[in-house]
Amino acid sequence: MTIPHILLANVFFAPFSYGGATIVAEQVSKQLVSRGTARISAVSLISRKELTPYSVIRSQVGPIDNYLINMPQGRKYTQFYDNPDVGRVFADLMRDLQPDLLHAHCIQEVGVDVLRVARVAGVPSILSVHDFWWICERQFMVRMDQRYCGQDPVKIEACKGCVGNWRAARRRFDVLSETASLVDMVTYPSAFARNLCEASGLAPGKGVVWENGVHLPGPDFAQAQARRRARDPRLVFGFVGGPSQIKGWPIMRDAFKRLKRKDFRVHLVEGSLDGSWWRDQRLTDLPGDWSVVPRYSQENMDDFYVGIDVLLFLSQWKETFGLAIREALARNIHVIQTDSGGTTEHNAIDRKDLIPIRSDPNVVRDHLERALVAHPDYRPSRVMPIGFDDQTAQFETLMETVLSDTRHTSRAG
Image (cartoon, rainbow, N blue to C red; front, top):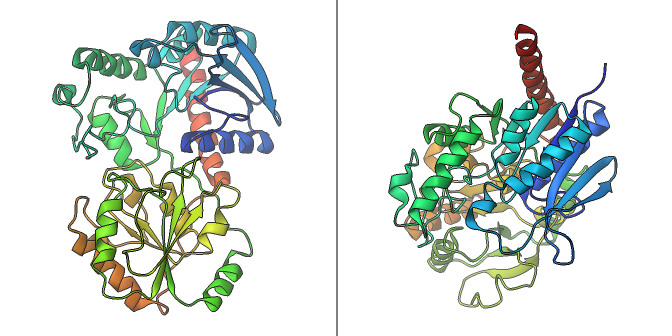
């Protein structure tokens, strides 16, 4: 039996990788190929002045071909979500490659015309939603004042004070909703994301929860963690969110200032490429021993997590998944977190222990104090989120469901 050929669309893909959705797309693709359950051809974007607009360059990383579409600069607002020129490139690729399935991941800037092209070509499609781009022009439901929007469901009429051109935003909202209805299945990383998007009119009834995989700890992680704790028994907090209001830094900073003890350490991850996140942040007036540590990759994340005991996840908006939380839980690291949407869909915390977004800093301080009092005797029970191999196995089931339904429909027709 011939294995299915998947045409995968994602705004980035190796060798030019960026962002969490790209990690999922790449890791699952590698697993599918290595397991022999699918062939993959990827399509992603570049933007080079020296190249002809919408020309295609073919690249290859391992066994996966990546067709890079060169996007011109200075595109119009509509071309970032609905671009017939990209659609024409996809139509040509589909004629040449003859895929059995389109898997549309993060298609910001790619645009929804690829879904129309697949429907016209008779190619079934799976859409994977990673954030709120489909129902929010600002992508994350964060208003211009850096506060979470809070709509549930999202009604475009309520967005007038948050977008630059409401008529254009309404047109965008309608086009994305209409085009999403063309796909055969929509996957979401959490029930929260699915429920909110479907309630907001995005392909209701077609959504399934397809939880993201994480890189699991290496075999020597626990030993390295124990050695670090033996060298310095102080509790170490870790924070990966950056110095922004929406990630909870002001509340976190205020909570630490209210602590009456200083027998702990804090590691702040420098997530920027130019070292600008923490450069101008004053830390010397805070109790404890504070350090800024380098950003980590998927491959070397154990180096960061070995160095902490508690992950602080104080997001002030409702997120779709919360990758860092799952990475920490897989490594037996305690998490102090806000009630931030899909990030809470794990069994390592009581609902009563979740910190409401926009909480008083005293609430956060109380959680910090409890962690300090419990240390070093408290060790959370390890929660093992799924790895990329399990996520891939789940996708194989979803893929077969869509392909089987398509074959059945074709026979019936």
